[in-house]
Length: 348
Image 1 (tube, rainbow, N blue to C red):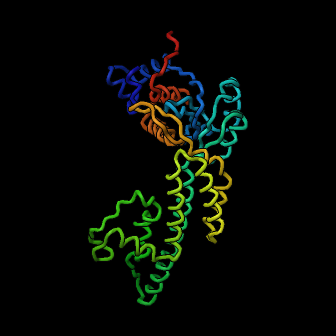
Image 2: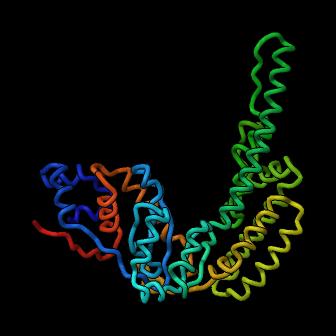
Image 3: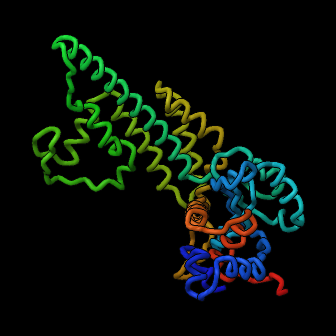
């Protein structure tokens, strides 16, 4: 049983270790492990994970205790016909004690508050808000790159006709920069390790540093520097107001108006998104306790811990052999990731 606590262990590797068969170790696990859900706490996170086991089980729903990091449960689907009877079956006193429901901006999750947790507030994870604007900017950059590629293809066709043979052109400066260095716009500036020492670039055929690439990139379009700066305004806001939801509310209102007045479609849509989720975003600046390896510490409400846990589900599915049904996957996941799993299977 202890061998099954290792997420990297497969049924085959466990069988080989104990000199038995895959079928035998799986039968032993299924006989002894059937884990109940854990009680809800005042701060819970919900998120889906794509496992695609069958048409009815494409997106499983993971529920996590934010304080301990333990998975409360995992459901076969995030669909309403599964979640409705599940949450409705949890006693009211338990559901009504929930204060914070942390999720991404998926509306059905946000609606869980009114449907099942009337004393809770919705908390939209800050990472997903930043991810939205980064994804939109990346779409803009890819479209810009596509236009340069189209220009290059047209030029190549014209030269081929002119010379009466197929002409191949090297990758253009614009496509090269957008393909290899657009991360300089998308990544948080505070996370970029700028280097002033130069390195030889085989495309441009001279020595360049990070600042040179950034400068050339910004020159490709008159709006790129502004887009990067506007995105960074939100990134800085997100990091500056931890534990200060009142201050965050004032700054967020200012940002919403600023983006609405920006005359850039992508940031006007961003303002609409921020406005639609205003209260839930502000709630993400609330601090509460978490239990870590070093003890109890204060942390912002976030879906970061559950995102990490969801990767474990995917890893488990990828390496697993013998996942005959969702129930086996559920029990294996809970058994592997809970700090102190309690066995309640039957011995027969």
